[in-house]
Each structure stands twice: as structure tokens, then as C-alpha cells.
Image 1 (cartoon, rainbow, N blue to C red):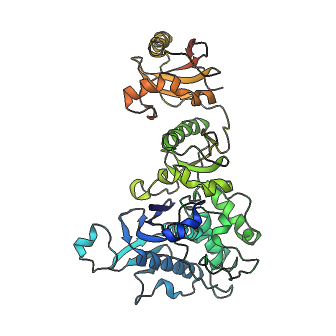
Image 2 (image 1 turned 120 degrees about the horizontal axis):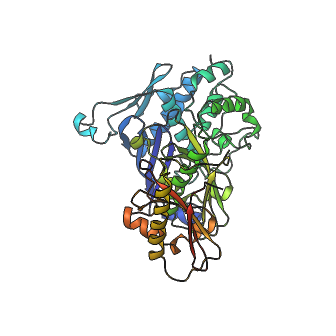
Image 3 (image 1 turned 120 degrees about the vertical axis):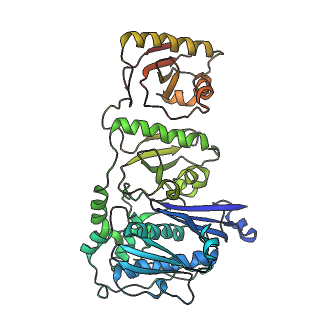
Length: 478
């Protein structure tokens, strides 16, 4: 079985493809399938197309070089892992404090460019510090994933507190707003603020021990495979181990500088976009032991830029959700640099019902976004046209127990341009209404995003269990 793992940050995505070892898979039937044989590795960096592509040797060299250079850069103590030109395919070179050169030698092809350079000239990519730390964070996520290449481990050596020239003040300068939560923990690690972890030992080494006060950077932020902490907006839940308390204040200050979307009307519109992205792609709706709850970060255009499991079952059952494949690809969209981020609570319930709501709720009553038809005569005429359209297409005996409430918008011709369920039963029984059928016939999808450029007239539509249809001009959300 082909297995794919994705570790995504705003400016970097690692995509691993491989197979499961059949002789070992039997031990992990109750978990996510183990990717134990790496076939292909791709590294997408924002602003750089096409991706870096290679096999296992390339990937192992990449994670060694990234980890070594990150520690060297932050501590100013040389680390040979980052510059081994004799045996490593990947090396790093510091250009200046905010510019870092990633060098990949000819054994690895950079997709289409390989033919033009005959695979001989090394590939050189200059990264800024934001891109570097997102790459570090993606590697962090890989090492935190026990079901991907479990035998691959990384040995890090601690840096003494007196050997580096950096300080807490330098952390604030060197780590810009785009740095992820786990990368900030790496910063603290390099300066001796927290002990260096023994990063994921091979599974067969059951006798190895770790000091009781040691905490890994991955554990400090509880990352999940294919589920990146939202670097620009989402603070870590208050379960951080005591060992990382030294960076808590800096982390909170950092997150306060990042724009967050809080406007109720914009959140309402994004809430629908998130629901419309996830709901059609949620295929595995049975067999959940409990509700899966996630915290999502969403850009202003609706792109899901990150997510984080908030309960244990959600962490283990991520593959039962469509979130990994819906996470945006920075190579296609571009990086998330200081963009406003909205936060949402997404629940995949045991009953197979998707729930989406703003993480902090609505600060006030949201309004419908977009130009509106306000002429009283036009609103009255369109009200009747909408009633006739729905009545002609609604037949059969309703099975829903309560009124289904929707907001429905029409254009100046009376054509339905948008609709939105307003109560849970409207979500649950929407297929018993003619709305998705009408919408699909017009736009090819019952989840097409609304067109906010043309003026629309908005109405509240009630489908009642006794077959009565009631349509009134929109008075706003309640």
C-alpha cells in the first residue's frame, strides 16, 4: 500500500511517499499505517519551484544538515553536520544573519532542472530566516511522527550555556513572526535554555534511558504528523512542560504581534468556506471512538494553513479526516507572511456530523458580506420568485423533526446565488430540500463559494415538517 506523509508549514512542506513493511505492519493494525520504506521525498520551499526531489539518502542528509545548521546558527558554535562536503548531499552556508544558502549536490535532481545541468552542478537556494525555521519545524514534525521511518534517529549534542554568544534578546531579533512554535523551542534549545532531547530512538532500543527532566522540542509543542502547529496565529495549549517555561513569555509576545481575523462577518464567511472544503471530502464517517477535535488556522482566502489536534483520539485518527490533503501547498499558493489568520474549532463527531465554529466565538452579531439589493419593490418581487422556484422543486414527505432554517440569496433575476444552513437540522437534512439540487444544476457544485460582486437579495427560508414553506426578507443572524 502506498503511504504518503506531509509535514507542512507556511513556507515549507516536506512530502514523503513510501511503503509499509508487511513483516512489521501486523503490529500496527490499530494505528496509522507505518511508512517504513521511503520511495520518494520532496521538499517544497516558498518562492522556489519546482521542489527538491530525492530518495532516502537525500532525505537523511537533508534532516541532518537542517538540524545541525539550525543549532550552529542559533548558538554560533560550529556543527560539522551542516558542512560535511565529503559525505553529505545537503549542506548549508551562512550568507549573513538573515540569509542562508541551502546546497544540494548533483546526486539529487531538482525536477525539470536536472536535464539542463546534466545532474552535475549543485543546486543552491537562498533562504531567509523565516523559511529556515519553517524547514526546521517540518523536520521537527517528522521526528515527532513515530509511524514514519521509525528506525531513523538523530543524535544532537548539547551546546553549553557559556559557549554561545546569543542571548534572550537575540532570540527576539532572530526569530521573526513566521517562526513556528516548535522552532522557537529549538531556539531555546540551542541557547541552553532547555535540555537537548534524545530525538526519537529506534524502536528496538528499549533499554535506552532519558533523564526525567529532559523534554524534546517536539513534545513541548505536541506536533502531529501532517498537522502543523499554526505558526502565525495559534498559541500552544497550556500543557507545555515546565522545562519550557523559559520561552513561554517570548512565545506569547510573538503571537500577539501576528494579525488575527476577529471580524465577526469575515469569520462567518470563512466558517462556511472551511465547512464547504471539509464536508464533501470527509469519507470515513464511521468507527470513531470519540469526537475528533482540531484547531485550524485559516487565511483570508479560506486556505487551511495549519491544524492541531486538541485531544488524543484526534491525534491518532488524523488519517480518518481529510485535513492532511486539504492543507495548502506553499509551492502552489505562496508563503503565509504576516497574513491575517482566523482560528476555527472543527469537530468530526462520532455521529458522522461535521461541526465548524470560530475558535473564540463571534465577538458580535455577524453581517452578510457583499453588495445587497435593498429596493423594497425588488425585494418583494424576488421573494415571490424564490418561493415559486423552491415550491416547484420541493416534493415528497419530509422526515426531519424540526424546521430547517436557511439563508438564501438571489440575484436581480431571481436566480439562487447562495445558501447557508442556519441550524443543525438544516445541515443534517439539507438533501431533503431542493437547494443543493438547484445549486448544483446552476454551478456544478452544491458547495460553490458565493459571488459577492453582484448585489443580492437575502431571505430566510423555513422548510417545515408539515410541508409548509415560509420565506421572509432577511433580518440578519440571530
